[in-house]
Length: 594
Image (tube, rainbow, N blue to C red; front, top):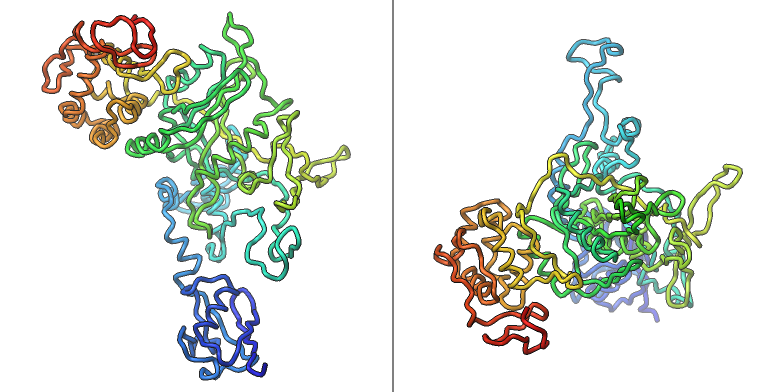
């Protein structure tokens, strides 16, 4: 027992007592220290003196040989490689974030002829540049801006005398911290060290995206066609890019170039997403086109009067703007597409992923409303603490703790009938505390990332009879009588079909064509048109009974295409099975050829 000793170890986070023995090696002792402080084996150094002299190395010498006695104080310092600042420097932020971080961001004002009493080169309080987070300036814009941009919020954090030396963005956690050994695990025990803090919901002062813009009306109209023809709701993913929004200081705009509709089961009142085997391929194609997934869109439309084409105005201040279930779904998507950020120790903070609802407006016409949910909502959804209410879509419900999961208390503040601020437990919870609204617009001058004037069928619309197959491709090509080859292939849904079709997928050989569409380079498109892959595509189109327009010279070597022969194999219009020539009924589904 005389060999047992206790060593005190002082770190930036506090002091801890490490039990040991005189005969214990330095290597074994350092492992105990690493476990106690939660470091990896190379994440710290221990010294005999506070001035970082006398480092204790991981070796086989005993503590007694190193002259370490009972009650001695050692000093632990995290190594530079494991410091949070070093981790932050390795984070690769989005291009728009890197661009805005280099901008001045200040709001410059002209000299006021009435209030300014100085020369042309002077400045006073009436004309000095304002900071991008100036609330008075934002409130006097037309229309007023309720939320400052995220980068303006970062300037506010990193401003002042310390220049943000101690600024850090913390992601909220609703889970019990692991590794607490002073008591049994939950539900038998919990302490203040491992217990997550209670959450008081506040309306977020900033937003990660300040504007959503569809490049043109055609994108939205094609998406709404599904509801117009079936009466069922529809959901899709928005693909586009993030750009600078100049109307707000250091603002970010999400520009939508295309909508991809994943497999789903839809009714008039519900949507159910199905597993999508093509999801990875779609993201890969979009990345090669210079696009990314910027959000999701869904419809909530109910026809009011079919004769004049009006829809019901159902989402308003008297009902709800987003239901609790939709907030949870938006939180799930935002957690899945988190925003890289150097000021967060986790390497990410918040999300730029947006939510767009196509619903009826006050004028009973279709309106597009943009939203995000707050970072607090993202944390509640990520840690499975938020539930929807069955009877009231405008209310959520914070889960109660159970033996399987500890849930921190969630509160929100509201005014009582006397006008006093009162704190309420979030059971239930008005979801308006979780919502951030974003302006959704269409440009005066339409823009076109994909310039095709014809419409190739959209994926996963078999219920409408719109199928993506080589017969529809042949029909699409035959309709293009005067467009250039680049304009013909500049269709997002056509490119998806060329990559993901089961007969001849071009995933490994379509890179040149994607580069041509991305850069609008007709020469690159013409080079790819002469490839063997396109020649095979043409042959398949002619085989199924369609033919590209001969005036465009779609042959592999530039010559006209060969018309389909009556003795060629034909594709069933109903199941796409390739049948032998001379038959009038499909061998697979027995339906007639016509």
